[in-house]
Image (cartoon, rainbow, N blue to C red):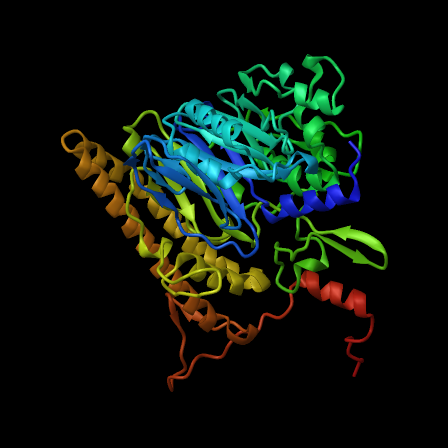
Amino acid sequence: MKKSFATLFFLTMITYANACTNFIATKGATKDGSVLVTYTADDYGLFTNLCHYPAGTHAKSDRREIIDYDTHESHGFIPEAAVTYNVIGNINEYQVSIGETTYGGREEMVDKAGIIDYGSLMYLGLQRSKTAREAIKVMTSLVETYGYNSGGETFTIADPNEVWLLEMQGCGGDKKQKVVWVAVRIPDGMISAHANQSRIGQFSTYDTEVITSKNCISFARSKGWFTGKDKEFNWKMTYAAPDFGGRRWCEARVWSYFNHFKDMSRWLPWALGKDPNAEDMPLWIVPDTKLDVAKMEDCMRDHYEGTPLSLDQDIAQGIWNSPYRPTPLKFEVDGKKCFNERPISTQQTGFSYIAQLRSSLPREIGGIIWFGNDDGNMVAYVPIYCSNTRRAECFNTPGADAVTFSDKNAFWVCNWVSNMVYPRYSQLFPALKEVRDSLDNSYFAAQKEVEAKAQALYATDKEAAVKYLNDYSVQKSDEMIARWRQLATYLIVKFNDMAVKPEKDGKFLRTKTGLGERVQRPGYSDYFKRELIKQTGDKFVMPNQ
């Protein structure tokens, strides 16, 4: 599909302003039978708390205002559901979890008159469903009734037994049809992912359940976008064909996730984006090893390490080997169009999580959202149970917002630390990693005992069990931010003025007279030394004396 410049510009604005990533592991692909799904909400300027929607019952006359997830503008009102369920973050009390990534698709399909945007649709689905299948029915019924005003979207919709992908686009303001969509169940034992590029292809070939809108294919026919047989219909190639950016900036993240669990060299040309005849990646694969939460965290912290897309082989890594790159992703040099890589772990993450959904436990105990308020590589993921109704102050801080700093707020404290680390990565990151991993490992070590106690309480007093888990989540959240504040002050003392203060047994060394011990000055990395002299010739080469 050839795209006009205007369409390409539109897609760039939609896709990369909301450049998120979702990973999926079905219960048969995990070590303990959990369903695991992840979400990174990546957008420059994004500030958000850990959201909470309390359960409720509502009168027939009650209305729900639809506030746009991105702009906070009102789109109007719809009837409220008679009953809504407790939602904490992107998980509800029945262990349903919904995430998304925006892919844009055809510009002319956006319905500007639609009432429901993609973000509102996620939380409406969470508030109104007890299973993934029910969420699909709720979400598609809502947009078919009230219209969908966002660009093309891929939703991950999961419960403790199933994971589905739902892809959706508007019909451009068509008065008779409001939306087209397709939903595919990821087969058990498989892993899948999406990252701002439509992933559902020729779904007639999939050996799994597929549900579509009635007009899924006929709408494309009516526009002249598809003329073949129904069984030949390819959703993404019709509505959102991948260009170079869709492959290199988006599909490459999926490729890298898969590459943790299977040799993906066969599909590397697709991820690189330059070969128009490259073989497309499968929607799902069988992993060579089973996954757990810790492994999912590792994948979310990925910068293409050890692959041809790695970020440690060029001068853009700077003096201290940073795997982060500035945006925009495009830049021009002497008339030549160039680009930066876009890894999974990126500095513009507002929040990220791993949802752990378990059918083997009571629903109030089985669902966890492991939550962090910054780039996944730079945070410890705190366990928030799906039955929680109270949030720690650090995840819901009065007065804190995108332009108001607070040292009580997790977003700002975590960003305070990470923004010290980004430019001096090889120097500072090991200290952050030590703290991060110690917290993560402490949560994993405590999980079995905590949940055993919760189950014992649950047998006689469900409310006591729920309160115990809520207290635990708040306690761990408070401990995390306290430890991160301590890390921030440690880093500024330890690495002040591009030097390193020596320490022993956790204490900075002093001289006999009480002064700080002489600092160490590590200087450039070996890689940067060579690149500097290669670029400058003899300018910094000392004469023989």
